Image (cartoon, rainbow, N blue to C red):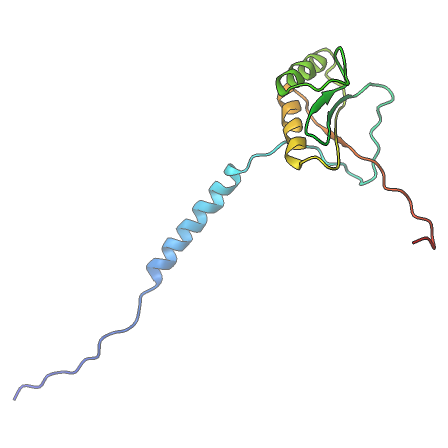
Length: 146
């Protein structure tokens, strides 16, 4: 009489190859993620309440109003809006003549964040080594006043 062996089917999954694949994907994403990010180079202040000294040199100030229009404090009429190309050309001309000129951006508190970043990128394209942001100090509250 022949005996048949009754083997049960093996119900285990070998997960080692899956772990290897996941580790390879993790390494690939860790290497490529920093390469995908783009940004505007901005020097952050060392102290939160640091004041920019503009007494000696008149700064180049680019302004973005609430409607998203750009203004530059140089040119024939600083109160007239300028397009992106004009902003780059005028800022580049000023920075070629006076490379040490401080560059500042004023943005209306109602304006879209993207418009301010666009102006910062345009100023960087014009040759500004660093760009500062103009803000107003919040009003000081008196003790006991609510």
